[in-house]
Every structure is written in structure tokens, then in C-alpha cells.
Length: 123
Image 1 (cartoon, rainbow, N blue to C red):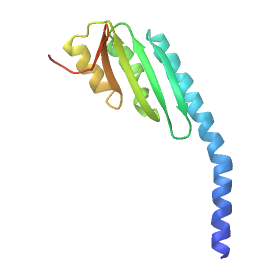
Image 2: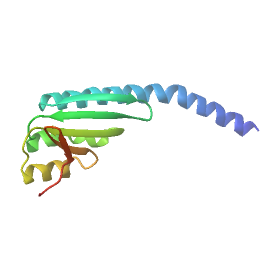
Image 3: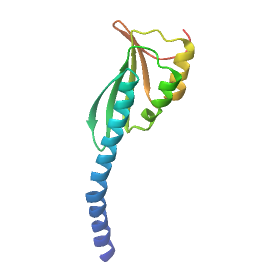
């Protein structure tokens, strides 16, 4: 019985200390990533459902350079769903392939007019 009480107290203390720290770290990461997206010419919006995860919606109106993609690889580590839309821009197979390789945990979408499709290499 004593171990159960100790376990309950340890759990409560971990939640009281751990959850606020996690919230702060998540917010700092969100701000850092949003700044990188903005500096690469994109827009980022999110629907936070902390601590479960967040739905991130990111749009770019032009293809990303290899340097920009390197800067955005932190998107792979976000907790939640990360959807990146390339809106009304033509991506070469090489650009699409590099984006797919560098952002493997993100949902990459090509949007043309009213049509959208998952980004892929080739026809």
C-alpha cells in the first residue's frame, strides 16, 4: 500500500512539473519553426491540441531550394500532423524528390486551382 501511495505522489509531481515544461518547449519549437517557414516564404497556421499534438498547415507559393529544405527539416520532429501545400507552383521531379526525401514525416500536397494531390515524383 505504501508503494502505491508513493507511485501516486510521484505521478502527480511529474505531471505538475513535466506538463508545464512540455508546454513551454512545444511553444518555443512552434515559434522557431514558424519563423523558419516565414523566412522561407511560407505561411504556417496550426490547430493546437496540446498535449496530444497539433495540426500544422503550411503553404508555399514557390518551390523550395535545397538550403530552405535543410532549414525546414525540423518540421519532421513536430508532434502532430504537418501538411505542406505547394500552391500554384510547378515543381520539377528533382524538387519534388528532394522535398519528399527531406520531409518524410510531412504530408506534401500540390495544389493547382481547385485540385490537390499528394506530391509524388513523375507523372
